[in-house]
Amino acid sequence: MFHNFRHQDKMDKVISALKLSGFQALTSFQKQVLPAIFSGRDLIAETKQAEGIVITFLLPLLTRQFQNKNSPSVLILTDSLSSVRRWENNYLLLKRNNIFKNTITILGSNNNPGNDLPDIHKKPSIIVGITSRIIDHIRRNNINLKNIDVLIIDVPETQGQTGFEQNVFYIASKLNRKTQIQIFINSITQIGELDTILYHPKTLLYTDREKMGIITKGDLTVDKEKLELRIKSIIQEIKENPDDLLEYRKIFKKNVPIFLRSYFASKLLMDSEGSSTGSMRKFPTGNMQTLFVSIGRRRKVHPRDLLKLFQKSLDIKSTEIGPIKVLDNYSFIELNEKLSKKAVKLMNGMEYRGRKISVDFAKKRT
View 1 (cartoon, rainbow, N blue to C red):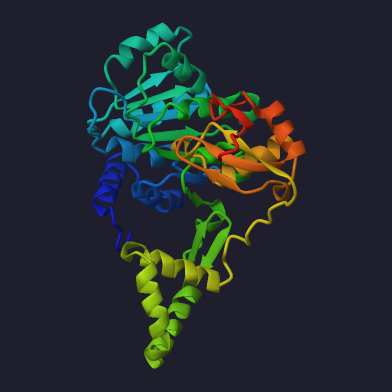
View 2 (cartoon, rainbow, N blue to C red):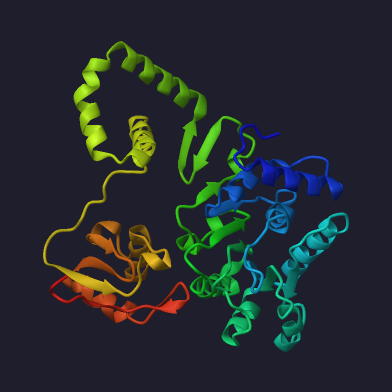
């Protein structure tokens, strides 16, 4: 049972639907993943062949109310007909004893894309399909992705051999900025570049599923009990010597916005525990040149994404890359003269996240 759960009404609907379908209790995977789904954040969930995977992601969608009725609100991407049928079978299982307002359309179960049109014209809330079939319908203007609220990616174990990752990048490039993206994958080591389409994702690992006192986010692990003791100790120190903090308090109130103060305090606490994600990256020196890159924040690109892209494309270390500045629609990155020429030659016109990007020398004004 969940205590102090922010979305208890949504959880109650899911539990009720599960019981009507013959399931007695939530699995450990469902207990771990459902709160993250309801939070609205992007997420990566490591499944390790857990029980009830598809039902975990499917039920919150079936019990949810979507505002747009004229186009699909959810898109679920798979890589094979067997995966498509797995989603369909789980839907039919849940539907036997439940009444859902949201409907599902399965794409890719036949060879002719034209046969999908009658189902698409019914304006289903949820579409499940093989990535190649979804792309086919996008190019034929049969599916509009601008109103997609949730994108779920069912990652195959051999995605590199099927072009699945590149297909996902193309589809994700057609979504609006507010789409929640959920990835579930057998092992986090198979994620490849897929995490680059996520915005501040919550990462749920298999190793943490049965650990009641552990919070995990990426590579950061925090002992809750130890942290709570640390907080109590700090509060006691404040009570004993409040005057020592007066000057610090004035500076804090002047410079930190009120709505960010809890986050600021949390960051200081995290750093004091030695849990910081790492030291500042060292920049190279010498004759550096600025390159223009035709992609920015509106495509959910962040400095770490460009750092990884240039490292991989040029086969260089992060210490060979200078400052990176990401704006809304484009970015700037600094490299030495030799690497700048190499980057323009190799990367200008390359495909990244489903679209071609421009990499060129920036004008001197920048």
